[in-house]
Image (cartoon, rainbow, N blue to C red; front, side):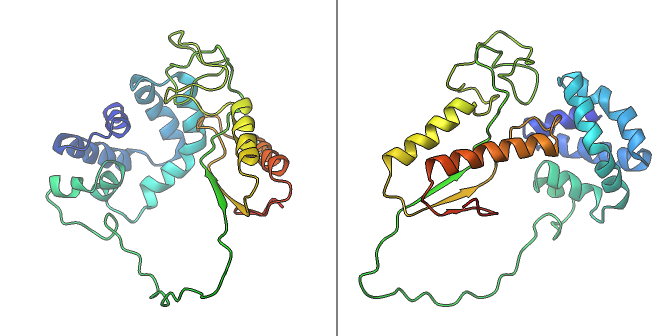
Length: 244
């Protein structure tokens, strides 16, 4: 049951059968899973059967078992609404139910003030916006770029001997190596010396969700921060927390 649900989520499968299967699986999960230990006992086999490695399954569940157990028991949204969130809003239709605010929700925003362009000879500003860098400090040239985990190109990646490139790897399974990220940001700084300011928004960390920790995440954020400071020492840098 859970194996099929994992597969349907991964491949974005949201037909009538997948929605009905999801509804059955989540209904079973909410009835059986009462605490995090049950998740750690029930889900690993399904995770491995879905094709993930043991350490991905165990690491992810170790971090997600508590919030998942709480969600199953305390969430106010219904099981069909969960499936519509996991797969597609179309699941509500496939399950013979009307759309709900939990699936198709709307956010009411205040009415914007009329925009009045300023007159005069105001200088046009040149800005750089960088986002979703996804630095991977553990990227290893020559390692496997195709593996059975959400992120590859590491010395611990076991797979099919597709060698990861020195500068980067164009497969969907690898994040950005340090040397590539440093060179790319440095090149932008040298090519566009007339920048007025920089806007820097996440994501900075790699996709190894099964292995993520606060300490490692901070190492990646600090590494990217140092690159920005080095490449744009005299430019204002705007992010969630200013680095200048």
